[in-house]
Length: 469
Image 1 (cartoon, rainbow, N blue to C red):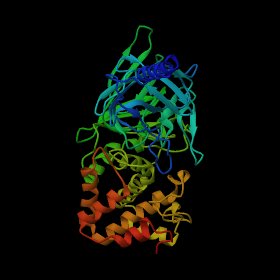
Image 2: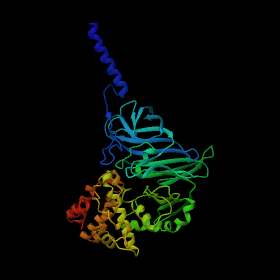
Image 3: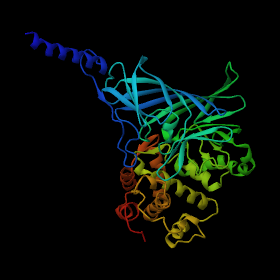
Image 4: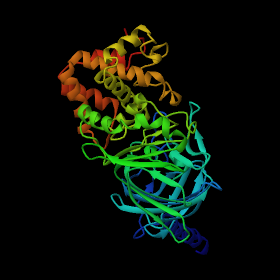
């Protein structure tokens, strides 16, 4: 009898241990682990399954003198399934502690995955708060195409940018564009420095140590790759557009003279975009001009695009257009990138057309003819692959996504006429405002709203492997 009882006791002990380690409620298993990636076609480990974030509260403390970042991330999310554990994306940095619903949580690190095990399982539909304390010297992340994003240091500060996955280098989160959330970002820096982020500057105060605390509030949904934190000795200018949109520009001192003329047109550009694409989707607008050479590209960070030095009119229009296409209407996956870049490129063509420059038709014809005198990008390569099917992650920002994507839009315009085409642009921005959309969503929407059969456009220009004619 004793020998028979031992296995039973062992089984009871194992069951009790499992109940403790999985955080069961009422002695029964409530959840299962959330997925450690969303199986994006190009970045399968980006993002995490089992929950949707509703709000990020980031409290960042950065000292350019030693390059150390101290952060607290308070993440409010809703469980989409019962969860015994869930993941956050975080690259580098040291995790000093994690709580879930105010109770200490176990966690472990594997690569860029931070796995969190709450003290008790989370129920489906439960809104839960996770707090992560972390610190370290954040580093840049190198993309498949060789570009760098993440936390980039400058001579007198740093800039945090994220497209496509670099935001995980400076805060933990669900880093995939399909999970959008509101943000409050507080940045503490030494006195004399500016700290800029998304949305509205709610306050600027001095703490007991004489350091400056900037509190930024971004209430509209934002994909994490569009979040930014900029620290440096910037010159700040504020104002409003004619329709009342608040403006906030931060410019590196050495770039101020070269930037002034172009940035002076930003209010006009916001009003123009509202006329073409519908109401501006956010409460604030602006720009950050970084010290020359900080980045190799401009980026449409929400409400305040960043530029690698003084920019030109065309690039400013492009990044502003992203506030409608890419930021408000965000891609469901990175395969849908042409919905960002094709639309923003076409906005450049429309701006020129509306302001005495080349027309969109002339741009379209220049690409077909390879006429680089009209557009320097019209040379070989724009037709290398269909914009809706980049070959790999290194191609999601390649020229076909931009130029051939814009040409898809012009082909729709040719097919349906200006009235229906511009109604389509405004309707798309309005009906998917602050949401996510896929290429399939757009093609179905375009056919429904215009009443035209656009299959040939999709087959030849959007998905066709051969060079369109």
